[in-house]
Image 1 (cartoon, rainbow, N blue to C red):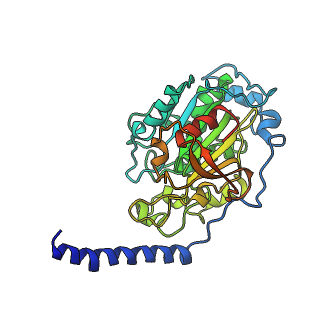
Image 2: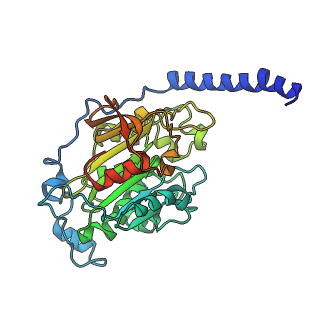
Image 3: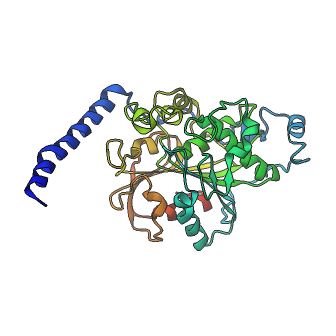
Length: 366
């Protein structure tokens, strides 16, 4: 390296990076509300939630039959008599996250996770779903179900200006049309914004006439999902020039406020939904080279299981989806049935990310 190059790095480039980082911290601190977890918020129990009480809420049997007559003449009800069924035969649905270019390669996002499950004895079908017009290598396009959601926050189909709630409506109908109406539960896994799509689908289904009668989801797993939102600074303009999806993930946006106030631990039909939330101590809003979701937000929803992966392995925002180790030697902080973003227990024998995911969707643990 020449003396001139060293001079520019030492006295121009590195100080400039430092100034930018300081500005980002100050901006987030003073321009945005504090990121809060779910502490103190009420969540319905499995015995009182409308899904569990009757698996019927805003639709009557007559309305269900009329609306779905062209699809399926009779609905096979979910089995409400039993509890959680541990199995490696459930269908798994992967939902990818936000894209600045409105396109995602489902194989790039989920190919390793799918292979990991199959190589470790998962017998159920595995589906990678997409929702952007530019998505590739996906097993299903949620936009194919948009006709069911025309009156529900529609517009800008297949772009990052499409409302997250509209995508969630499409996901709910995809689950109903292919699984729930035939009496089948599914396991959902979301990365980043994909977890918010899953959360809204489960939250809104019991109460909104635009969504299906109910959906059966036994497990929901999220990696690096901003459950408590992302700070105002950088959340929209610095990500995608004020696109709708980034705006909705701001922690002061009506979408996030609604989930924070009312969408804690939303449940599917039948037995209910066992949530597992994963975050990393190495993700940060302030990493200008590789920004990620702060772990407080990743764990910022009431849920049965929360895990903060510590350093090492220091997962970055996409790192969870590529760790295929079957070892159980990671250090984590964790909690169970927590209403806050705190994780008060420590373990040094935790499974790596994809192994933890497999354990979470095959049993009521992790």
